[in-house]
Length: 259
Image 1: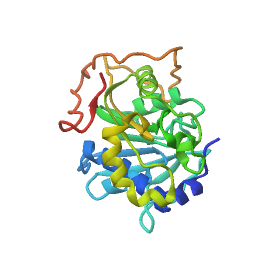
Image 2: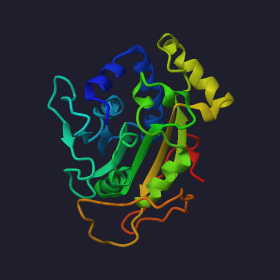
Image 3: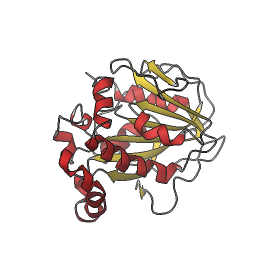
Image 4: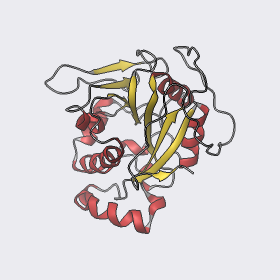
């Protein structure tokens, strides 16, 4: 069962949630820049992280799963948030240049089908970032935060799911080294700097970026039912799309190699 949208909103309105938002959003913006001229989709509960793209992007849409609920967004402006069936998104094929999935996979009834929809709505040169609670991090065990609910993942588990959905992992990074303790939120920057050097496996969130595999033009059904085979797949070399080569993953040093 997904966390209610009001619980998510209240968390990110808190001091601890604000620190978590800042640490994760920084990693995303380092890779995607300001999103100038792009069509961007946030899937799950992504509004705290896609807000910064609105001034420069052509279109920014928040899609929230039905079990979670939806809230109007952005506040006081024309609404661009919608309630969706996460395995049947109400968007045309190849519509978005960037897709961010956060608070999306951990509580998804069918994570493989959700990623199949991400594949469908991404443009051939699109890029997706999937952010999940890290299995080895302390946040996954703290139920007072959204990262302590549902299934946490290791990096290789996420890479395996992405590959099953024909999304090729190209880079990854970690975030959220501060303990999930409200009175330590003011020290989040210090923990982020020191933690990445001293205890990287204990980060609270893993972010993996992927590009769309397109071997040949073909129709894609609206409802994608991609099933995960047993085991975790190893990363494969990226395959260039037929219609258009993927854009560079990031500026040097921003994301670690997926290999």
